[in-house]
Image: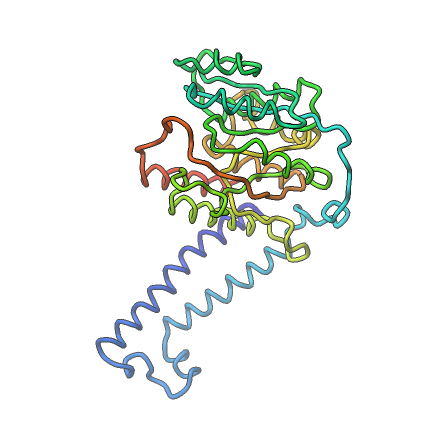
Length: 338
């Protein structure tokens, strides 16, 4: 099925270009030579018959649509058990949240972030995984009440996040949460995410609701549209005609989320390559975590969260559109080859 999906995605791109080219050629011929150059028969059937290119386009489009239907009907490995994927309350009577915050040189924001979350209802532990910061991030975070895990070298955000998940599972928490260190997310959004864990395993924040995003945040237009496209591609990847609506996503890159302990325990070892501590997915760790959850039958939904301008200097500011496209392509590769 993975290879089948990859072929479907690749042929979609080819067919899209072919269809656009055919339309473009016909518009050009119409503008230059008039309607006679486009319509040579008296009926639609005659036009299709007379146009060899159009016949092949329609044939390929038809085969692709049939293949998609077969793909949708054949998704037996994901989300096909009605007992798992309808409303079933399992109330968490005493929520205990362990929050993970990866950091690297976030001295201007970390105090506010730690204090906001540590004062939030149900948050018992805040663990800061520091990527060998050269500023006062560690001292400030520790003074604010966080437990500090330091690394001797900067091995990246994804490595810190996975390490944080493993540290969280050493505590007595029954919920693990992750957020950013730059103040882009609000602690109070936990109050609306946690109740959904009564029926789900992983709740992901979505930043795609503009009315609750602060003007000037890091989500550029290309980021928003690319994010939405990749999210819908994941929906197609795990789409099943028998259970429409099981996977419904709009934001592939949001790390702000809450996960039931037992759900995280099912997937945490799969977040790294075998016999190493190197994270799978690289910069796409949030995307990979979502896909891994879906594949392991974690009931997953999104909840709109507030998205603020970051505090302090972005580590990727100035990299521009080229960087966004590069990250988007790496996300696309994960989706197509996973």
